[in-house]
Amino acid sequence: MRTGRGTLSVAAGLVLVALASVGYVLPPAFDPPPLKADPAFAAIPPQPADELRPVVAATPVRREEISLPAEGQRLEGTLRVPLSPGPHPAMVFVSGSGNGSRTEFTPQAEFLARAGVATIAFDKRTVGYDFRDRDFGLLADDALRMVQYLRTRPEVDASRVGLWGVSEGGWVVPIAAAKSTAVGFAVLVSSPNVSPLRQVAWALNEQLLRLHAPIGARDLLTRAMGGVGFTFLRYDAMPALRQVKQPVLAFYGTTDPSIPFVESTKALVTALTEAGNDRYTIRFMDKGDHAMRVNGGPFTKGYLETLANWITGLPGTARPAAHMAGSTPVQRFEASDVPAAPWYAGGTMLGLTICLAAVGYVAGPVAAMVVRLRGQGSRPVETNARLWPPIRRRLRRMAWTGLGLLASVVAFIMLLVLFSVNQAGAWPAVLAGWLVVRVLAVLMLVQEVTAVAAYVSALREGMQPTRWQYVAIGGVLGGTGLLLVAAAYYGLFAFPW
Image: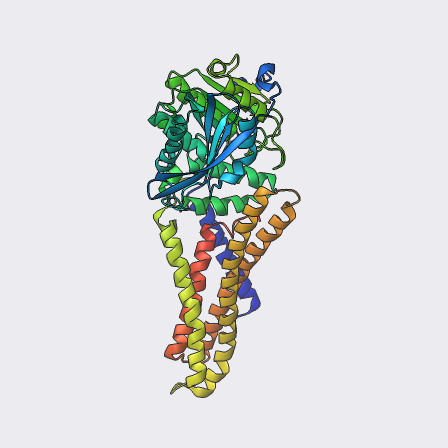
């Protein structure tokens, strides 16, 4: 007896509704509210003219390659010293996340050195720093080694040696400044000042909005983030910031899609106020992105001049006429924290689910092959020979669909990362990728329902599966069932599409 299409359609629809409900009912939910307007950020004055005065960057520069011992390895860097009479103020560049090659700072280091500021740019350590484990205190110690080295140089004014940190470096520099009074000043560029998880979640939401991506894509990624157990993601920047007593210059770009610049500024002001430190200067740079560039090209207007004039003017420039100035920043949504995933949705359980599904998909084809090689055994040969091939073909298609879904999810995430950097004209590709993922999920659901119906019908018609056939059927149906539950949790069946 065969199951009718109408019955199968109803069954598939009911299962779809049940799986869609899973995505709505189970935690964690992530829906950042709009950020309430703050009058303090609506009436920011323009930058003072003396900060933007032209800088003559024409001093000859001497370059030296340096190598300093550090914990677990040596740090390689490039020292640039102005050849004009000193002693000169000096600064160490601290990288953001990633490999952190010294070459990324070459344009700024050259400009500052020619403007009279000695600089060191060094390669970030490779020992004790990776995707999963990041010790910001260890990175701060590396930066302090560079500061101490600069203070030994006769060309350098030891009282004016500071640190410059971008992005992740904004968590590192305050730790170093709080640890040592040898740090004479701090420059923070696109410094998040909130936890890494809040920063990444805000950036994800902001970039997906700019990509016009479906809301389900955000839910997929934030639920995945909630299951990540990296301890550094919940680092609290405030304790270190509250101990910073040195002059601080902070830059934020008004088009930066990577950090919540309004809340980052509030956190910085709050911490410095609690520290009793009123020597801070915060500048919002028009059209500036995360690296203070315009669309990844030239530096935003006034950034290099402000940086050079502030450093060379210390200590006088440490007390500005206006703490905050520049272009008006507009942050649309709050930087909400991503709730930790429940135990059944953590990284370990997700990995176990994928491994079990993969084992099932491997066991299914292998068992089916064994059945073909060994024949039907003592079971009813004619009945099994007639009913088994259609089931085997369904199992094979299900295995390919499941593997295709896993591959498409990975490819979709990579697509989002790629287009988050270059967002021009990306939304059609993002929408198409999301539709592919959703269609494959629904196809996998339909295949599961129809395969179960076909198996039940075969049993009613007298099929007596062999042990290997049980392995094949159980492996593929079980693996697909696990993936369906995982897909439901990550919102692949949620409405609207």
